[in-house]
Length: 309
Image 1: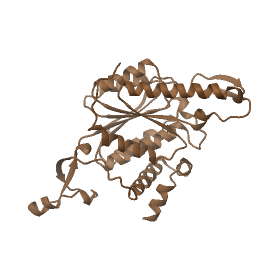
Image 2: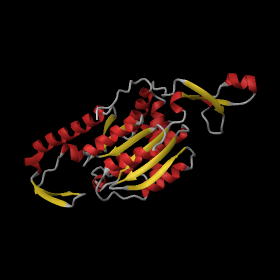
Image 3: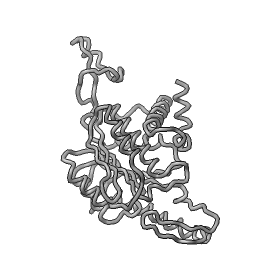
Image 4: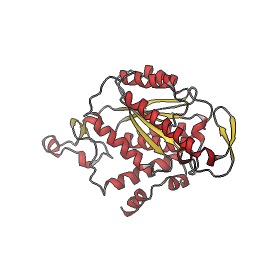
C-alpha cells in the first residue's frame, strides 16, 4: 500500500496534468484520496442503515451482514441512508473563459477531473450519475445511470468537449430543473463568470424542487492573485475584446473587485441555501473530494429553509 499513500500525499495539479487520459487522472485522484483516508480518522459518511441487498462480486466485504449470512446461508450487503437511490447530476461549464489556465491545466480540465473523480467514486458506491456539459446551450446530456460502464460515457463526453463560446448558465440550469422529475444532488462546476440574476433564480428553482445543490467555483490562481508584472494585453475570451494595461497599476483595485466578485458568488449561493466551495486550480484535487463527501454527510442533519429568491 505505500505507493497509494505516496500518490495521495503528492496529488498535486502538476502531477495530474502530466498524466494521460482523463480516466487515468480521475482514478488516480480517487485512489490517492482513499489511501489518504486510511491514515486519518475519517470513517465515511454512510452511518444510518437503510436496507439489505444481495452481495455482488467487488462489493466491500466490510459491509457484508454476517448475521444474515448465518441465518440464510446467503451473502447480503448493508446499504445506508446516504447511499440509497441517490441521483447525482454533474453540471460542467464549458464556456470559453473556462479554457484559461496557468497551472498546466485549464479551469475546464480541472473541473473535468473533479467531476470524473466524483462520478467514479459515486458509481463505486452504486449511486447513479448523470452529466450536463454546457456553454450557451447544452452540449452533452447523459441521464443518470449506475452501471460501471456508464463512467466511460461520461469520460468520452468530457474529453470530446473544448471550452468555447459564451455562457447561459441560468437557462441551462432552469432547463435541467424542469427535466428532473426526481429529487437529486446537483454538483455545479463553473468559474461563474457572467452569472447573473437569472442564474440565481435558476438555483432557487432547483432548491424549491427539493434538489440538493453544491457549487464548485473554479478559478485560476492568476485570476485571483493577479501577479503579472509587465504591461500586457488581456483578452476577454468570450466577447473577444482586448485591453492593454499595466498590471502593477491595476493590481490593488483588481484584487478588490475579484474579492467582491467571490463574495457576491458566495452570498448568492448561501442565500439559496446552497453550499459554495472556492476551488483554486493550483490546489490538490483530493481536497475537493473530501469537501464533497463531508458535505454529503451533513445533508440529512440540515434544516432546509426556503430559499430567499
